Image (cartoon, rainbow, N blue to C red):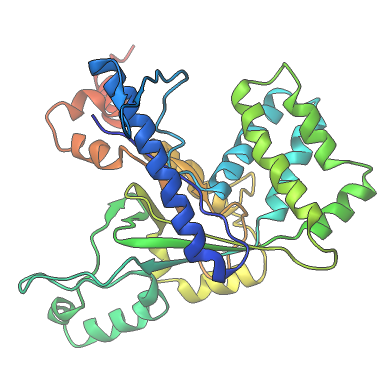
Length: 356
């Protein structure tokens, strides 16, 4: 039996970090005591704590692992996604579109970085592997120089971290790394835009949370959005609120197009011009973020897509969580994959059809 415990560490100043971590550890210890009390109540009827004190506890409520370890921005991202889905179904309710667009604009300016959790000890025979992102700007030049001196020179290329190639994407597991997100929230600008349109964002979100037409999951997600807006309103005016968070999950991955290695310069120029991809394969002029989001969801069961905004500085990428990605890939190499693959099922159907 595996139990998942999660807690948030919130602090307003870097000097308060150590104290906040210790306080959070106390909360986790309290949860462990509650857990042990509940288990022992089922086994022996009670748990002995202290001197001649016996406690009984029976937990009441639901259980789920989907939300375990979710960061605040991930929950806001899920709220935006759910508001977007509901706005297509209830297109007459313009409040959904206001919530989606406002929250996206508030959190679209972000810097995401990956940092090692700790210095990893390697065995004597273990290969030191390098990360992909630092070599992107120079990969095309280094690759060209290597093959000019012979393809055998590619054998001397530095070993890279383990990753998956799926179609035109490179999917890299985030192993022994923490992801840091730094947000510069454009709250004042969004507030001015809503004021010109005579829209009260906080009131709209509160009314939506009381609307019976929408599912309870959306009502619960709106609580995080309301808490964010209220916190931003309490901050001093004429200042850009800054929010940082750090997280580490074993089921977290990042993905970007393989073409990035060869076209890094052209991609950087493209995003600096703030243009969206326009070609016959993208008639709706969807942004790269949306294309990557749909691509990943079509390949694997995934959630917690980041970044929230659709603007990039250098190249398109997406960070996501997928608990079953390894399992889904392992199934591709089993004998039963012939009956599970959607692509192979379509091919079999076409091949087995008779011409009239």
